[in-house]
Image (tube, rainbow, N blue to C red; front, top):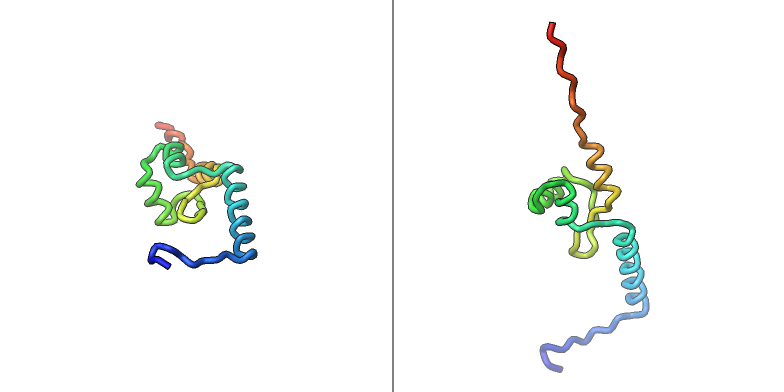
Amino acid sequence: MSSNEWNFAWSKDDIERARQALKEVRGVLRAGAVDIPTAAKRLGITTSGLRRMLRERRGPAFFRAGRLIRIRVTDLEAWIDRNRVEPTKPEAKE
């Protein structure tokens, strides 16, 4: 066997777990999850700014699909609503 060949065998259980995990990820993505550039564009900020917010846990809820980071559209909209700042009425001058 050369050094570039791998002797690796998947069990039926391993294959079924991988299929199930892939099915769950696909379901979430179809259900309305966006990547960081799309979410950053929606928020009007840079991707690096959103990444920093996520790293500091100041941004919307997110999940990882392997190495990919995704944000559900519902979580993004809820975060926007929670962080809304209502304008104040100017004080009446006497």
